[in-house]
Image 1 (cartoon, rainbow, N blue to C red):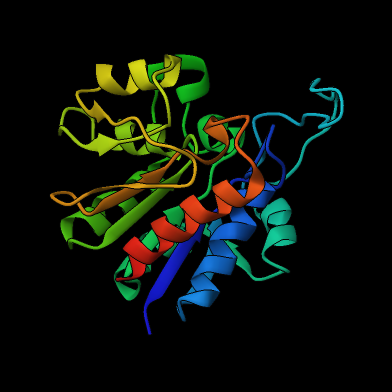
Image 2: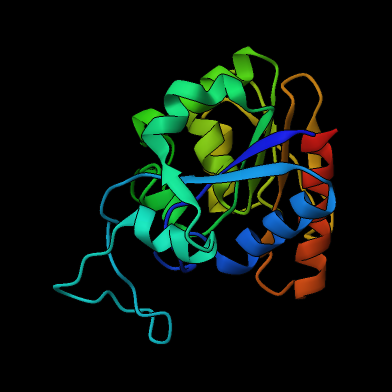
Length: 219
């Protein structure tokens, strides 16, 4: 049975992990017979956003680990613990959501000049070094691109976009991909799928793309 770590960044597509994508990842991992553990930083989100209005909520703070536990039904652990035991896992998957680009790294504000949360970087570098597979959903390939800047990965965020341009600035190759598919970089053992980067894609296409990504990661 493969052991897969899932990295979350809160609960909600505007300020944390995209809930539908996260559920799709967990569903597909269950379907594949994998053993799963969710992780998130035990720290405050960059901001709190009203999902109905899209506006930031002033004076409110939310903890990423506590919020991620909503998706994980209470079974979320601090990311810092994964940073010291990543060798116990066979792969890692990062669902999308703006929290990935704001909480786990600074891609949302700085693009190719962004930095990555230290524990995330440590985990991904260790997985890559051990030839374990990494799955990146939606905007998460941008985070992966920051960690491995200049290393010529093949990644997708769907169609050509501002995000894909920034990924290419980091020395990677962007691959156009539909929401119901995924791209697998054989050399680097990294799977990516655009999910809600394809904003008009129907939900079943997003689930199908994520299923294909998960199947690649657990092979």
